[in-house]
Length: 522
Image (cartoon, rainbow, N blue to C red; front, side, top):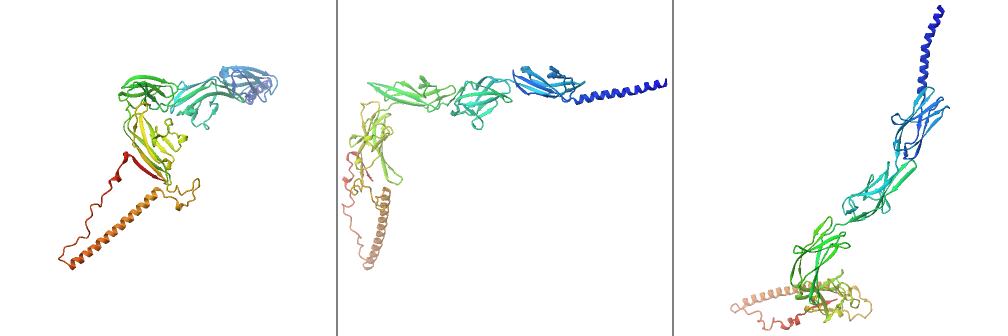
């Protein structure tokens, strides 16, 4: 009986130890089970991905469970062999994005793996470019932004300008900001075609899509309009024409003409920056004050006023001569200017020894081949003697008439005689290069004037010295006479001048036919 009680007591003492040992075995098995989940963190929508769950040192059978967000069971796999991996293949949908982990149960123990966050990448589609402002038209100096919009996720953007990739380093005028291409101050160089590329990348796989091309137009602000007018004659009638124009700007622009603040015409210029308006005009009458006005979608400008008065050519006409020298003070050319006192639209013609020079068909500011020694400019009002020699000596004058009336009267200037001489012309053999040394070269006009002025000063100085000497000598003689004969009257030092002395020859100042004479020495 006692032995039986002792055995029962021993059994009761062993049971807690066995229970603790069993619990320890379970706990140790649970902590030693450490599964590992491997797989992608990004995947394209519609593709398939594979997750691998591995539990090293697990005893079979092992149960593998792939769990999603919120403890959702994705898939289960049972492995009846030890130390194996479970494979889970998923088709990626829009709801596949999230975190995944793996639970492993083996030998009565359960382990939880690491977590993998899967991102679902949507390839780019529906690529297009929008602009700010829209449509893609910008003025010089304004801000302009292009946006690349696309459907998809995890996208990057690349811009192309005239088929060349735009980068911040190669194109400092552009600024890249996400899906935007920013131009802080637009210039004419920014005009052209643009398109963008949206692309996504998963590991080594890249997918991209391009937008359609967008043509950007850069406009120039219109400049202040200018105004001019002209007149023509057909038979006995006169016709006026007012021209409005701007020097810079982007068409189309609208030009309008006001006469005494009343609009008389309007024209839209689509290809140029000039417009013409017919107006009534009569020579000698004030037809009113005209202004040009130009309008664009962002500007409205008005020209300076001009009075529509055509003054006929009348009054005095004269020729002014100016000489032009080279850097070495050698005379290069002579410039003759025709000054017309009255006339809005004078036509000027030049005559040399009563012959028209150049011909009436001569084009302004060009040189006629047959008369290359002459050139005209400034609407024929200026004549240049491009070559100076004895052949150019003679009488020059200009005449003017109204340019709009070919049958109108001429108003002529007095003739100007230009005499061109060459001191060394006869001493030099023809067509032979000059062998004169610099010491024997002809003096320039400035050198001759300088030498003449020095000689004049020297003569003046010598004359002054002589006068002082004579005055001093006469003073001594007067004192001597006064001393020797005090009672006698002083005799005059010189006899009175004859009446003929000091007169000038009247014929030397006679001016024949009011002609001017200009002598040029070269």
